[in-house]
Length: 247
Ligand code: F6R
Image (cartoon, rainbow, N blue to C red; front, side):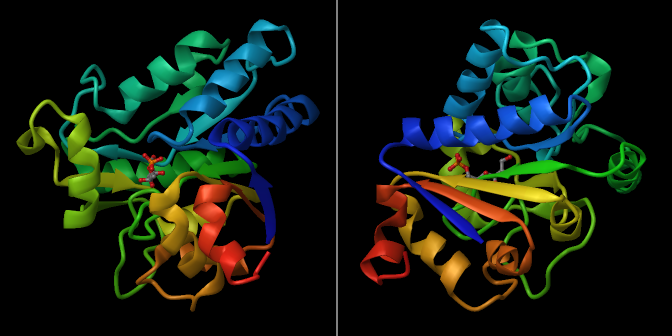
């Protein structure tokens, strides 16, 4: 595992954007795995700026998002589909048919999940996967559990995740309590993984995920055994790892 410390969350975003830009330039038909949430917003702004400066061409890039709430239409402003259009898709020359987000409104969620994994395979697998991390150690919506789930699946969100994410809904009751998420297996199949984290709320979990035992109770801990993981985090998020002299 490679750890890249950043002074600020803006610097974290720039470092991550450089990795994505290199990937896109060196393989213009790359398949990217994308995340939502607060942490990647700045990174997407950096990618848009590079595109506007004529440095990045997304016309042959394909994307697969990690997750989506069950029951939210693509035009709901808290759906991850909406987020991606707002944060990236509508501002670069990605082709619509190349952008994939699980459909949380599908009538048959099991089939939707199976098809999603199948589609990733048909595209040749993910070259570079972006991840954030939840305060409970989730990656995508793989919540702490008794085992590591493999493929894309429907999941009941934990009270911790509902508490953190419900702040973005007009009323907390509007927040869906379940989601579709790529599984740990689907994420693990990516050739390269970049996890970004910032701020003091992530310091405990970053330490536990990257230096604690590998356990499905901390889903991100599985990344310790992936052959190509880069953690990019600001000093606030790295505080515990640094205090323990681990970097
Ligand atoms: C979102 C996702 C989640 C977030 C995580 C951190 O697609 O996969 O695992 O990465 O909840 O969210 P933020 O960045 O809002 O702290």
